[in-house]
Image (cartoon, rainbow, N blue to C red; front, side, top):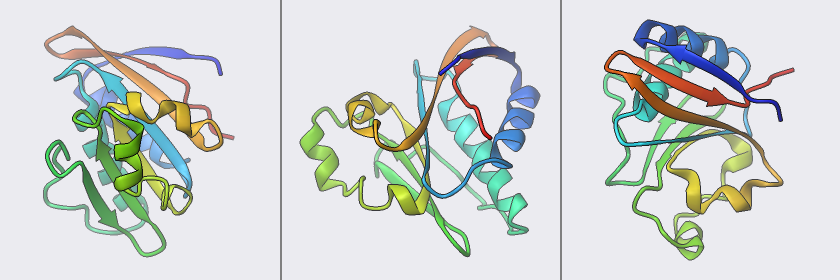
Amino acid sequence: MPEETLNLNLEGLKKFCENVSLYLKKGDIICLSGDLGSGKTTFSRYLINSIYKNQNKEPPNIIKSPSFPILLTYELSNFEIYHYDLYRVSKNTELIHLNIFEELNNSITLVEWPGTILDSLQNYNYFSIYFDILDENTRILKHNLIFS
């Protein structure tokens, strides 16, 4: 898939997420890669809030990184959003224990640190975003998000 590169500040990232949220559907998976502090969780927060607003629902009060629970879920009327952080997951067998593949077709899934799962997503509708820090206020996003 072709890749696009964007330089975004926080406001630009928020608008980007609002746009992406308009096209997401059940079964879509977004894999978020990049260094610590590069914007993966901020992207997830903006995207989840935008999805809730699109559904005319009050967004969750707190959207944080699922670093320690590994998975946080957000329930909407006709699907759930699954937000994974696989930073501490190092083996494919651990993915099976998380039941990560059980709901991929019935949810919108965000995966931070997707290294251990990428090879298993070939038969799914997934997109990748790589975050890089340009400076304190700007992030470089390289992505293959194309919606039809």
